[in-house]
Length: 235
Ligand code: ATP
Image (cartoon, rainbow, N blue to C red; front, side):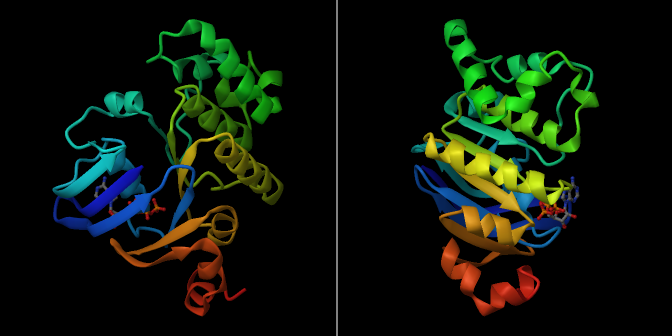
């Protein structure tokens, strides 16, 4: 479904991605793990058209995503939940969710999709008319994911959804990720919480300073000594 080949991204003189190749098949949860600064966010930004690569290719369902506007990439079926949530703090929960659907004109379907988001995150229904900026960190993450789902993505890019959340909420977010995938949405998940990411994903890639150094079934990586030592705190 998604195929990235030999991708190179630069920030001025900084060579952030040095020939990254990866694939995500329809129906999968694939996770990309790696330390701070490895290039995980950069890869998601390149896929969604926010940071153009200097070299390499990105294909989604057979079409190149290069030189397309971010909103055209959303239209093709790729939604990105950025790190740090980036919800609109002075709009209500409802307004934030409606904005997620701004590219769609099938208004009749919107109510159904709102319902789906509320089924995934009942807390959002309770907070519908509250300003998003007054939500807790966990609720803001729910809203950011809900907003992305309102665009009806086929592929959801999630950047560090568990960052800064209490352990109980981390569990809730990962349960919902599994559920969204079960409903048919393919997911590429960037995480520093390797333990949770590997427990929810089918396959995983490990990124180190701009290069993929390891890939395989998530369960196999979870058992790997090298991964345990480097990313799972030796657990
Ligand atoms: P984090 O989890 O901290 O976001 P990451 O794995 O997502 O880490 P990136 O944010 O993709 O890593 O950063 C990869 C490299 O590119 C780092 O060396 C970072 O300092 C650099 N970088 C990222 N964004 C910029 C930018 N806008 N300008 C210059 N350098 C940048």
